[in-house]
Length: 313
Image 1 (cartoon, rainbow, N blue to C red):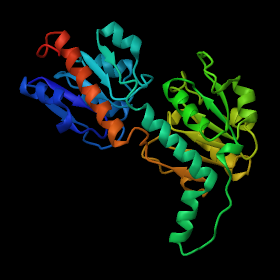
Image 2 (cartoon, rainbow, N blue to C red; image 1 turned 90 degrees about the vertical axis):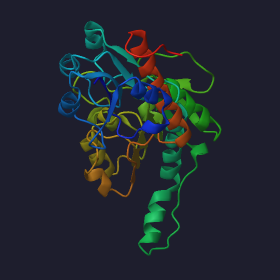
Image 3 (cartoon, rainbow, N blue to C red; image 1 turned 60 degrees about the vertical axis):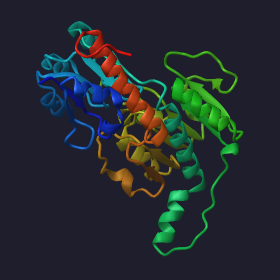
Image 4 (cartoon, helix red, strand yellow; image 1 turned 30 degrees about the vertical axis):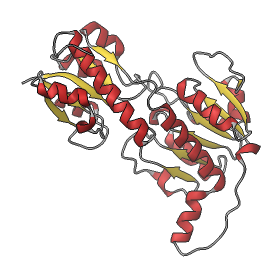
């Protein structure tokens, strides 16, 4: 029996009509048994020769993984980024790769804004203190009085800029690929952005190679007392250097939704200046539903185009 594999750790299989159609066509629908992001070895083990298509999360679909999945024809990413997929290997192996670029943008952007406000108004910290029996109003700051630096000015970065603009903050933006000015954010090179921004928020794919994009040297360029927000990719940030910068008082704090290794259990969780969420940027019910349906539809259309399912509609 041919199989479709869903590796994203949270997916409402019953709500995706395209998956029901594949099941009716004789496909087995297999899901992630670990309930978290898969390692390279784990996804390789799940992609047997009978897996024809997959709805992918952010697990590493390396050349080794794709070459070992001899039956695989279509990879449908449930999300925006394709940096976890070796696209050159996929092309060589004849594997179609799609994504859902628009659906998660609003959800990730709104979480980013929420994390900024949480850091500035110390909401999570105040909540923890009250639960611990301590009543102490905490002094915060206004987003309107801050300079926000956006690193990566694509769909999500631009949406964050529009949200922050409503608060009256100054906006700086940089992108490795460059971008057309939109009248919202000022174009700025990376180093002066890091030096000027009170809040730096990351919205870019994983770095190529083995190093971190925001390494110790670049963290050292950030404005004293600045806050880092990362709702993009965990491997963008040198977490050890970030911990040290916060402990030393160079940075005022951080708010993170993604980590180098997940689930995260490291020293950032010990710092009161840090807010942590469990890689849930796209987990707004409305956006998630659209994203999952689009991913399932892309998978069905890809298989149908190869004559492996009914005609796509």
